[in-house]
Image (cartoon, rainbow, N blue to C red):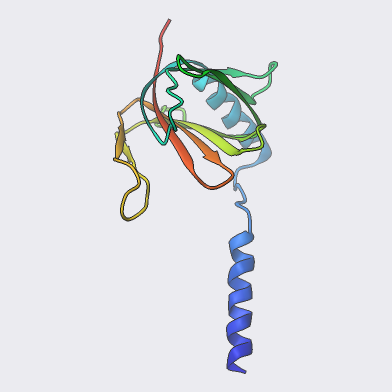
Length: 167
């Protein structure tokens, strides 16, 4: 009896861990937030700092909207390795009118990458590995800065602090 209860409890925990996040916003609110966030985040950026870059040496990121949609495309440029393009699909956006929070997360079209996200930081915020011991030195995203995160399918994250280029 005890073994069966433990097995049932473990199975329930596993199933609960597989549930997906259900956005409480209406479809119209989700579309409006994605549209506003994609509009605000589109532009050119300089890479100010990075962690887990794997020697790519990206120096510039250009973010654009795909073919008039709110799905994001990114082109990352490196003097070492050239350019890498990421096209997003299934993008989700968050935006507040007071610009306190703006973010877009997209599924990636490259098999090795699970998703990428770009977020504007309203307050200074550290990015750390979340492991003990830390796998990389803490990186600070300044107030008004942007953090770009690429998540590999393996679970490894590549972090970049971006500075928007005003033209």
